[in-house]
Image (cartoon, rainbow, N blue to C red; front, side, top):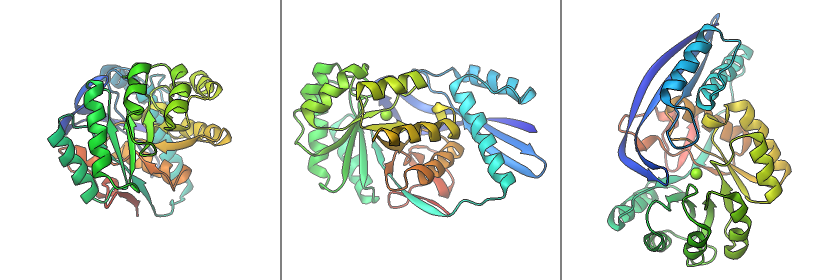
Length: 315
Ligand SMILES: [Mg+2]
């Protein structure tokens, strides 16, 4: 088997502010594996502050693996890229073409100031999205209350409004903001605080479903979230969870425990977006997924990962 590694940088149109800081661009290693006439593609792109290795560590781990491909990298972003390439290589060898299909995706709304926020929301609605995800906890609680209020005013009740705090609130801030929101208007809050022990109470007091995302780091942590009854939804990012095989495993464990899953991009490039789209079609075809991120880049990503009227299509 031959492994080829290519570096690539994708620039974001505007910086994305999260509770972990500002993201302006993505550094990616694109991976191609070849065996006879068969190919598989993967992509590795760590992001500082999200519990992953550095880009340099990703490069080193993948270079090592390219020389000795029997030993998979242990670093999460490098591992995810490698197993993705191998998964697609196996599909290619089995000569099975997956059926065409479409999945709904959400628009990511990250603007802090009110006029940009209104513009982003209106654009997303005009572009046909049926779910919007608003980043919160990157500013003060009073501003978040105002931002959520504006979102609920602009968005019709049939459009899902999801929030993502990336663990940035204290339990008091989470309850302060979320109890001010009109009941029934927020469909999901991802990672309200950094401690999942807080989440059950937040769910009970606000009625809002809780999503686990960054906390889904390893099997012990997943078991703990289930034991704590902390989340009603798991947000699965194949590009950090170790690629398709662990994503399938966690999805099955979630289903056994009555937990919904959403497949999400990690501000991924085209290869990881395609992988995530395929897993969304395989594992939760009727959910609205977090894969509407291609338009956030300056560079035009391929059409099959670009949302059209709020959907990604596999042709
Ligand atoms: Mg999230």
